[in-house]
Length: 251
Image (tube, rainbow, N blue to C red; front, side):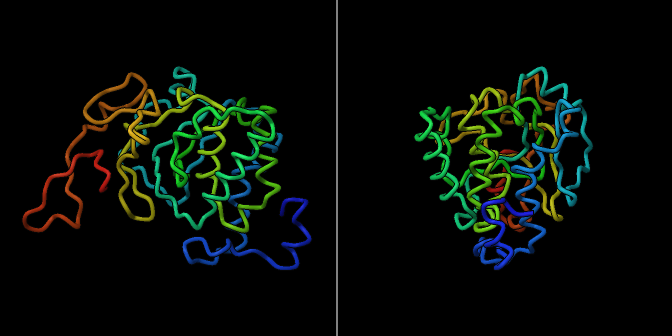
């Protein structure tokens, strides 16, 4: 269902995502976004677990997962694990509104955001692969922020997805050291397109301490399986193509 404060309004005029990416989204899709930002952390069954592993239904892992992803989270003391970071989430999809709401939330409560200022406005931890520590995401401070953002209805009015919400919540509440990028599990295929690695640096600063660029290794990653081979994107495969490393932004 809808957030309580917006239920009557949305039932009378069902939202379509506010023109995010010039697309009208089915209502069930918008409900999904709300679920992964708010509702899931209020489901009583999740308290039976230490972690939630969220994967897209249209995600392919052709190389398999060569490590215990939950053990990685435990050993690295992480509250959030992701595969792919982006600073080019569509600006029509609630990124500015979400950032402004987070900054107001912090100012009104006297909270000093941990590393929000480091992240560009259009930052997102792409939602096709996320691992969330239940203890943190169901904590009073996390739930208070979830409830505040949920009441604004951005998941419906601007189709702000969980990938933006997770970037806002973690940058508000925890140190970058509490985040973990699974850099050694690629390549993935999402909707038939290959995704190799997300960015390591944000505004020139290495935000994630355990993140790696090939061929450097981190004890927390599965990099020996990744092989760090150079790849040529299909668009460059014809004559004169330059070689592109596995961490190249153009991929």
